[in-house]
Image (cartoon, rainbow, N blue to C red):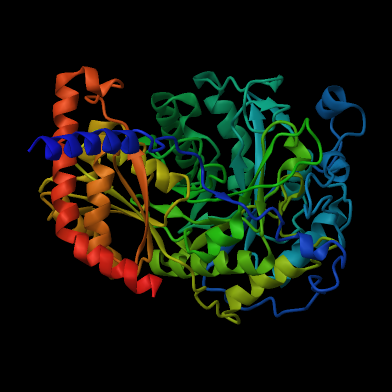
Length: 583
């Protein structure tokens, strides 16, 4: 009896030493491949990637309306000359870019239209020719308006006044403050956005000539107007603005408007509550499920993150459904290091024309499924965001490849087969605090494609869970709720059924640190062929010095005893598998 108690006590100490060493810290998932997808081309520049110009019929009905966002900053204007030095344009950043790590494709330099100046209208004529040839329906011009002060407006007004520029367009109001950080932050503020109710009438008057232009893009007869950051002014003021704008346009013969916001900067509200007709999915910086790529930086003073965009798209993680009316946006590629190499650049590695085409194909399919008539729109970011590496326009390496891929997808001339990949899931075993929140973190960090919460009390919804645990759950995240499990045995059964249903062959299981040994036995018993990673969550009621607190000691002793019982139960099975693998 005494010997058995001694062994049990030694085992208890060993058990606690093991469970207390589980790592509870999480980081975004990293792809340890240090070689960029682009590296293979640097020694053979452009020979395999370059796609030449190809003429297409321009009168074909595309079934949907792809609208490309358009940056009008490619010309000199007084403010830029004052802030950045005379002669500064967007090309200044583009041409100064350089590779930041092995295989980094920079600088990205234009062909065809070349290093253009948008105050020259012949540039826009050529851009329209290219856009029409490759199936783009129209341009959405960024419009910079600050309480009557306009920036970069000359190309847009040239376009408005020259009716020979026969191509649909609309305006996208970039309503944030203008800063050197380029992302609407308030550091090094250059032009502050102080939009107030006193500006409503003046702004509406400025918009009127655009909305009455015959080329202006309409949705069921309603002029389309996009607002970059609806929540920036506060909900109440923004709703008053939309009400005023709609009323003004009715009184001046325009009729109803079709107003969209962009879903980014944490704006996930119901667009109707902001006076909007819908949103466009736009956020490039909060994409769920991306894996970081580990690279060796060339320069110590740079600050950037490289993400594995190829794996994200091939894993179909861009396949999201939405609660509210949401128009899809596709990015041909993304690398804003020409602007922000030292201030937090995002580089989406592997953004090839084929990867873009795969995403565009899905967005096109979903647009046809979800919308009819004039609402069959999708947005492409962008036509010419050269300093963000987000452009359709031809460049020296790829030629017209992104434009050509756009047309081939719109024509239905290319079929993207599913890429066979290892499907990974995240599961949370309920029963302890912070387990669900930690599992959601894993999902957001890119550890899995979808998630199961096992052992949910019947009647509990995801909204209730997020409210209780203060979880940031993004619209469209693939989270399933399991209501059948009552204990760890039930968790294992429920997870096994979910894994089989979704053809998942690898999971990250999240549970409290003390629960991992027993849950490992149960899950490996039910799923012997599935690769399982366990993620530990700390427990508030287990003291750091557990052996000095009777409550903690008693709880851990009970958990250790349960582990022993389950371990003895499955011992023959585990020995058999061990011998089988050994032989």
